[in-house]
Image 1: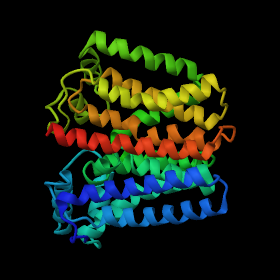
Image 2 (image 1 turned 135 degrees about the vertical axis):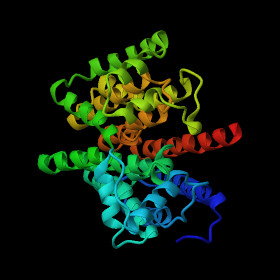
Image 3 (image 1 turned 30 degrees about the vertical axis):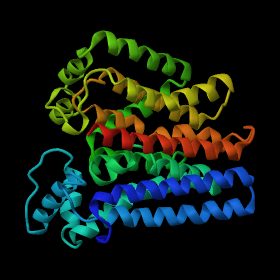
Image 4 (image 1 turned 90 degrees about the vertical axis):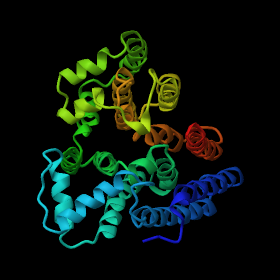
Length: 366
């Protein structure tokens, strides 16, 4: 385990290392062309280094309930299985079976390393499959997202499920594999029914204009009707009792909200504005990108409707985990962008800066 770094500074080490990489990458974007051999060598080296070191850094962290919150609960359950304990939970049983199986041959610290691999490797794979030699830019966007750290060290099961969903999307042209990973992601965490449902919807309805209008309408509907939507979806019994509990159960102390979250709506609007700009104004006609955009709009609109929910962060994450992909995709794939490399560098840098400033914003609030 990585114990030489004080736990109180664990996140800051990740944050400032990412800051340094963002600055160096921005410098390269200003002095080299995107296709320059030196730039390809740089992003390949820094990409693989970040991928390996970040996986080890997160995976070999010490067990702590104070700094990594739910990690201690996972460790306690895992060690109970290692000593012959039986599965008593009746939700997300496959994940519990996975923990119980691993407890038979993996010590606790290596189990968390395995979880880190399942969490981060799909981000690497989808970046490689979608963007080839430019994969680093997408991968970096994933790992500096505001929610990345939280769902790697705290909401582990949810983070694994969303990464498996992304892994399914990575095999977009291999339908069998895609379906298998969709199923596994649901079995790890049932809230993935929402993005999978959005994916299925986009197979039948493809016009991004209507998804965009629906997203816009969700804002006044949420403001005007208050808690109506939370109670409605809870009464419909979405997924299970726990899912309904996220809507109207006890407050999540880590995400206390006082009503409509305009700050997080602003954050959620980044990929919406970028997608709308490329699809509607620039007539960018990439079918995969349009589908990603439509999935994001659907899942994020759902969150906007239930934005006052007690566990609103968990529903927000069901769209936010797609945000890096929706934002960076057209900047890398659309070669008609003027000063493309500089633009990519700026997008990465400012996207990271939002994560950086939000960290200090929450620090000051505490």
